[in-house]
Image (tube, rainbow, N blue to C red; front, side, top):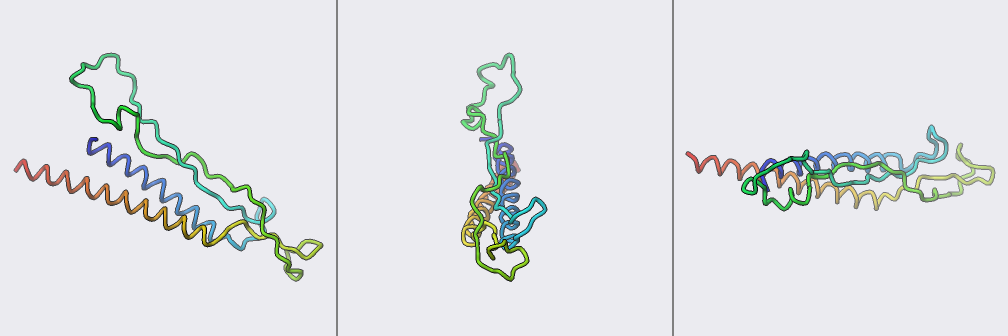
Length: 152
């Protein structure tokens, strides 16, 4: 795998994981929001990833000796992208609080379908994925520097 391909793939993952952490933070911040502009309680959101299309523009003739043997290139791998940010279709949590301003006629308030424990675990996973891709970039940089030092 080429150095630049590794950097591009890791950079795309850094961008995607950063957005994932932002969405998770938004979920945590709105875990008690009972009224939104759309009406009803806040709904938990999740980030959906998809592979980036790594296929190059068609080349009409490439001599066999110039074809890459890079498995990532042959399979068209080029990183990750955010396909969508989706709302999770779970029922809100109903809590009996008759004095709450958003209580219905029976005294129940609908709270968001956000579980803080789940959000913290997802945040830790996104943070670890981010750290892993930072390590890949640092390793690629160190490898490139070592290659330049050999030429001295």
